[in-house]
Image (cartoon, rainbow over all chains, first blue to last red; front, top):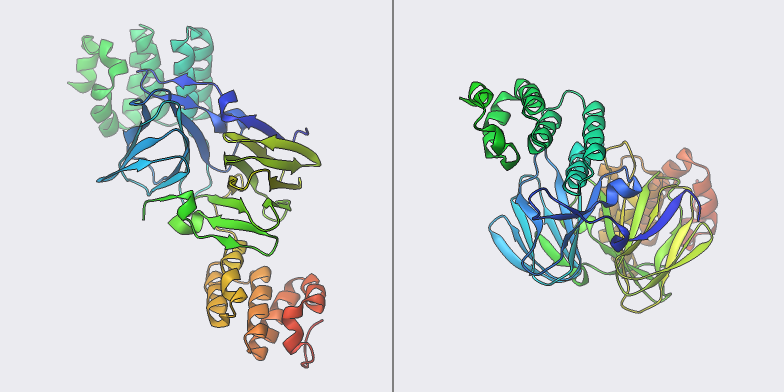
Length: 215
Length: 207
């Protein structure tokens, strides 16, 4: 095999749990270094597991979901439907979407990008991996990845918000508030709306600095 | 339309004997390339080709069945959930199905550039119309694609083919001339292409 291509199985990929344990990411794009658009897989190990979180894509991404194996129940906007293997689901920008595993070992591929824009890998992938490392006890490796991701994505509010969550979970309130203030300065309305709803930041709520920021 | 099964997609048997099932066109996806392929008469499931012209990185994921991929001269037998990622657009790649029910998902795009739907999709989509002699439909599909890809030499050449077969010799000559003006190779192709038999004797035929 040459450097110009590689062969792998989705089962070769890491299985990374989200912080709340609800989601399992198989980080395809990051693993192979695919650059043209976003492509990852999500696993529902058991029937009833969340495969694709309930969300709307921010920033104009359109997405295609492909049921690779197992079976899923998809909700797209107002519609809920059964999705056996081979089902293709197209979610235009802004559409509410969610997927729940109907069978054990359900794998859904998610492909996405913004029409008319050159793709740039989103920092959420690196933060997701960093949080998974942290959950697995690899805290210093996780912290280094957070720092590296912040350095590669200067000027965003998402970066410091994620860093604040990381430090809050680690019990470092000073560092968490420093990052949270940076995020707030960059996007006060967004942070004022989302920070109070973010469970990762819950342990900061009793700190007087929280009241200073959010009243 | 928001969801389809891969077996509900349009099935277009291409001349190389494999079946193209257009995903991007079905949903009018604008942000990335996505298609499915199934074996046709030849057993091939991915055309042997490179992506040098488009500069695409490509992922080929086996959704169902089994396929033998040949990439850069190396064979790999893959089953469901296994994939080939071809980073280097210059590498030749292709696949033959090892089971009749094989489906391969192909995802591709050019790094660092907004996605542009490939001109070849319109040419492939027009194949059934051409095969059935519905020349007006085939011509219209090419004209619509040219609005999205102005001046595309492959589209102009194929449009000229349809016009030649469809009894529009003047339009065929004009569009073939436009293609040749961009790249003389189209004259070489036209010299051997039976689509141009109806106009080969016309004055100004560029081959």
